[in-house]
Amino acid sequence: MSSYIIEGGRRLEGNVNISGSKNASLPIMAASVLNGGITKLYNVPPIRDTQMMIEILKELGCKVKRTNKKIEIDSSNINKFSISENLMREMRSSVILAGAILGKYRKATFTYPGGCDIGTRPIDLHLKSFEKLGIKINENYGNIICDCDKIIGTKIDLDFPSVGATENIILASCLADGTTIINNAAREPEIIDLQEFLNKMGAKVRGAGTDIIEIQGVKKLKDVSYNIMPDRIETGTFLCAGAITGGNVKVMNVVPSHIVPVISKLEEANCKINVGKDYIELNAPKKLKSIDIKTMPYPGFPTDMQSIFVALLSTAKGTSIVVENIFENRYKYVQELSRMGARITVEGKTAIIKGTKKITGTNVKATDLRGGAAMIIEALVAKGVTRIEEIKYILRGYCNIDEKLRKIGAKIYKQD
Ligand code: EPZ
Image (cartoon, rainbow, N blue to C red; front, top):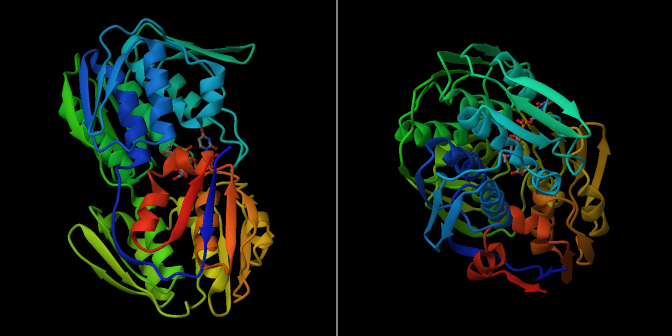
């Protein structure tokens, strides 16, 4: 069980190269099933979740080669159409494979992904959408068995702009008979990346980034090479690391337009921000100002930055209010931050953060991916040493975060 050991109180200064996006890589890797051929992907971050996706693709019969620059997937010999329960539980986002397998092979068996670190993570919107596309769904003994003769394009109105459901509908519809229209689609940048990738394969997808997406079914999809977009949440995480330490951090190889709400909240907290074509430079004040935040679907403030901002605001001047509107159980990390002296009370969807100077190092346990990131942010400003255990959650979504932090002055190292 690995840990991070962090000695706080150091001002961070310097440049950070941001890695490729976890949440763009996963649906695009799943989509490699659709062309029954070769997919070459560049800038996929070497993290646990992308490694898990490689394992699942291999379990289906794909040949996968990974070098440090490229992942090559050969999906010409897929011979299995089911995802095992332990892999579904291990990584909830494996449900995005369902749409791809159904889209190509018209059959798929999987289980409920399991939930609870940040919420129940239901997939009712995914299943309802599959049924609208003509897919028959039977559930027994924990298995969800889907099949159909053909997938027929149709109009789908999503009750909620679910990222995963939007991605699954797109993947299931690329090779359908006819056209599918998604209303109230999720507008996240990762969906635009998926659209660009699929269209390079020869699909006909348009409207990603808006709430109406149209997918015109085609007969066949071809081999493709693609470069994954930068990770917008890693970008925000490093900006917050600079902000909480009164530092000066420049994040490179990023798309500033992907994190406008994060930039504006950091400016509201009194950080000076200079935005370039592919970089963002932050200069933090000695003391941040308290601010209020409400998480919303894109282009609103991202839920994945909620815990990181709660940690950031634990030392701000005054009281901040954060409302989590996307997941119903995304404050589990708060109890760990409180052990470090953070003064946070949670009432339902709302966290009230009273700024304090008295943040001190102690032993904490990562509860989930972004909760673990919040503990790193807190530890950077804590007096003394913090040990963060269960960092397997952090390694799911951040590539070499300790090395990147050391490069800009943090005292952090991994202990196995
Ligand atoms: C994606 O999860 C991301 N994961 C999450 O990032 C991100 O927090 C989330 O989108 C919201 O932006 C990946 O892209 C791999 P949703 P997803 O479907 O697709 C409810 C991270 O830290 N819902 O948009 O699972 C759901 O319970 C991860 O990188 C239903 O009720 O998110 C939640 O309350 C965490 N029924 C809300 O919608 C459904 O069928 C948003 O979920 C589907 C979702």
